[in-house]
Image 1 (cartoon, rainbow, N blue to C red):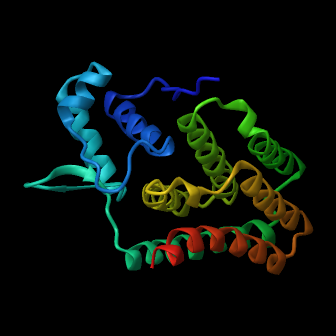
Image 2: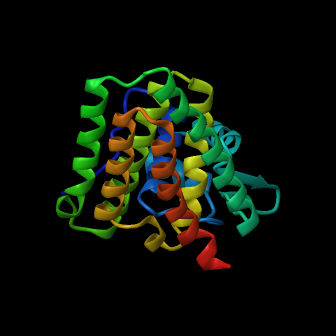
Image 3: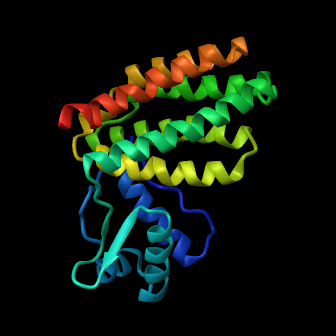
Length: 225
């Protein structure tokens, strides 16, 4: 099964942004990797202008950094900075989960959509033939699950920030893809969050979410100390 990004009809700079994010989702881009404008321009058969604009957008999202000497490169963070990003993400997502439960934002159709995402993740391993495809599908489904919750909360500002934080953390985890976990593990973690959401009890939801996030913190920060 060949999994390729589906570029919608967007501006050229948006296509470049999507291209870079796809390479992060697939594990191809890691912390410190250089992004050469000429190479990207040739790869996508576009001029340099939209590539430069895309680099500006990605810089604003905290996904890449720029320096006069080193040019554009994928974000690098110290363990302390990584932990801080985890803490910010967890704090914001807890607010969203609390909103979903207390304001009864999720309906039966939402639970079905979320369940379908966990089912796709559970069956993901057999859908892929290459490591890059596995990493891309696992990360894409993980993002889709959480993004669905962000959108359902109708908190667009938090959602925008959380998506940037998701990519920042993923860049670090790409250094060792074992930290991403397996399809089976993440499907079960997401399913437990979903089942907790159905109870409409905030303590249960937050407990399952914290266990889910702690697995990433342990694999990414604790083991690398």
